[in-house]
Structures are given as C-alpha cells and as structure tokens.
Image (spheres, one colour):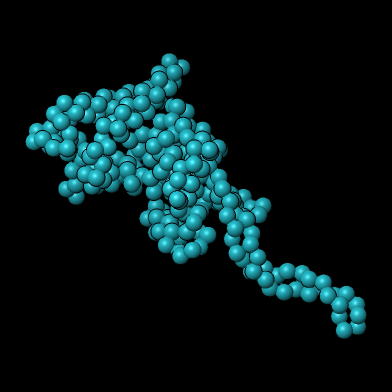
Length: 253
C-alpha cells in the first residue's frame, strides 16, 4: 500500500481547507451612560461565534513512507488474528467458484501480482536516488494509479466480502492514521496546530473518536469533514478542491 498521486508528494501544501464557526464566551466591551450621565465602558460575558480554520495537509515523502510501514504492521496484525487477505480470498474463489468467473479471478490474481511488482520497483527508485530513477518513479506512479483503478472496478462485485479482509482492516487503520497526521487547525491569528491530540497514535485515535461522537458540536462536524476529505483523497489523489467539495455535498444529501 503506497500513496502515489503523480509520484511527487509536496510538503506545506493543503489537500483541502475549510472554516467552521465555534461558539465561545468572551468579555465584550459595551458603552453606556452612567448615573452621572457620563459615558462608561462595561465588560459583559457574551457567547459569540469565532471562525476556526481547518487544514488537511499534503503528506511529505517521509510521512508517506511511515504510512506504508504502518499499513504493513496493521496488515500483519490482522493476518496473525486469522483474518484472510484479499489474495487468499480471490484464490479461494478461483479454486471453488464464487462471485467472479474463473477468467475474472485469474485476471484479478495477475493484476495483484503486477501491482506488487510495480510497488517494489517504485520503492527501489527512492533507494537509488538518481535522475533516471526519479523519472522512472513518476511513470511507475501513473501505472500504479491506473492499475489500482482497474482493480477497484474488477473488485466492485466483491466489496461486501472484501470489507472483512485483513487488507480492508489495515486500509481503514491507515486512513485514520492519515486523518490524524494531516489535520491541522488555527483560531484567529494563531499558528496551525494538530487537531487530534495525544502523545501517541492510540491516544490521538481516542481523541478522534471522542470529537466525532460529540453531538452537534463543531468538533464533530470538523472530524467528519476531515475523514471524508482524507478518504476521498486516498483513492483519488489527483482530486482538487472542486471535486472534493462536490463529493462532500453528495455525501451529505
């Protein structure tokens, strides 16, 4: 599992950004006439709405490498728990018959092997670090994205079964990992900060769930939007702001 896009992952850019209103209590200055007729300033506590900006950052190359390691660890854990992989499930269908025809099963197995070979070659490009390997990595990235799209179409009839595989479980975990790592926010003129708090991934994940489960809170809305954006970007890494907004609008209808 890799994050390819066009083979170039740029830091300090945003995949998407949005703003929400947060209700806070503030001391507000108001003017009024005192008993002596003179104007005076009075401080009173009021609930006001302040804008909070959210950013889903583009991952750095190092972060993409860390995500790949994280995915591999989660996949290994799932396999040790006895959960089958997609490849194991496809082979079972190919041997015993099932949702896919024999020809489709063979094509799927062949495509999965090709994807694995391309991913391994893609990794080697960043070990060599030459101009030729960098150029080759861009071509490989395009091949991988195209092949993954073809696989998604071929696998569509098995999605209900695949969602219980080790691959799907690991993919869900890496999506949450990306959401936690990429989500930033800022209030007023403050610098950007991590939205999901915690000393390690488990604490940050717990914080994500806590924020998501807060009924009708701006943090719940922000968490939901962040997860949607990350999920859409993960499978459509050439997505722009317009296509992301269209996806969010469709999802909310």
